[in-house]
Image (cartoon, one colour):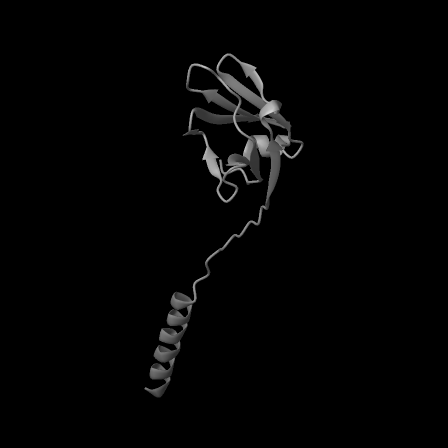
Length: 135
């Protein structure tokens, strides 16, 4: 009888141990990003009609980043250096956007009025993040 009780207690203890200490797989991939901040002055822009554009050489955008990573752009105007605005966005008289390819980022500023003038001086923050393919 005592042996049955001990065996039962052992079985319950083992079942509890297995149930409450189940393994969970936790995967943490640290894939660091890189932020590059570059100035753009009004005279730096190239104009086509109402659209101004500026292209940055970005060797940080490798084949891997282009295929699996992420690129984001924000701008901070010289007159308000304490703030960044993520683009694409309409700010003042311009609609800002960007595109990227391997080795480069181009930002666009489309003037929304009738007499285009180049955008004011700004800092352009380009964030390049690596990622692991998920599909």
